Length: 145
Image 1 (cartoon, one colour):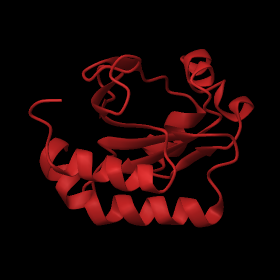
Image 2: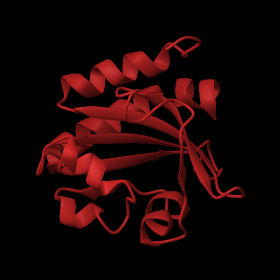
Image 3: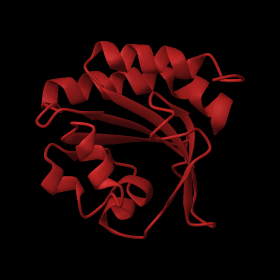
Image 4: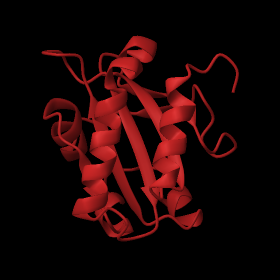
């Protein structure tokens, strides 16, 4: 991955140490209705610069408009929100967390996307992930925001 800001592989390594098996960072373009992958741990399945449609659904209201972390600890909890749920499940992944990143007082411009086995995102682990993203927030925004 050439021209990758240093913060992205560092954040990926730290998230992997906590148990993340698939890691991406997406930039959000609500006007175009798209999220774009800026970094990926799985370039074959989820290439950099790949896009996903941003539906104005419950996930959007919760994570993008509400600025709250989305957590699904089973495939049943994310199937209605992720059009690529079959691919996620085929990779043996059963839980997802999307942590929104926003400049002070501004809209959410990025999400840090973490996937692991079902049941992975306990309250303790989620707190560790959120603290990790908070520590890297300024660098993420400077690089991508």
